[in-house]
Length: 101
Image: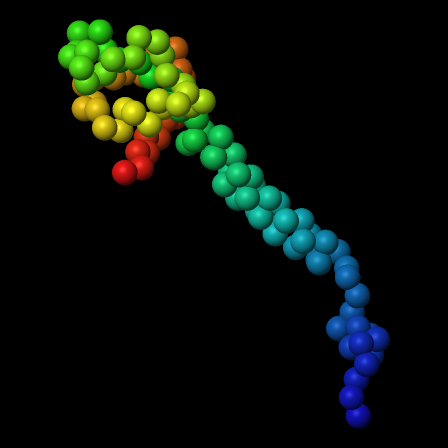
């Protein structure tokens, strides 16, 4: 004879205090680790504007104003040596640099 769901719950018991505590601990740990993974994107994807170094050769880096993420020439620095450009001062976040090429 097969047991029904109600009969199984009668044998093992209902959702009690132990299950509530266990659910709270597991839920808190899951929430804390997931929140860190979601928030880290805010810090590692932030990238400041950049501009050409004035003392460098103008034929390599010839932009006169700072270049931002929305600029058409934002990816141009990937083809330049690192000494030809610098980040605009005043940016205080963690920065990662990725050039596609």
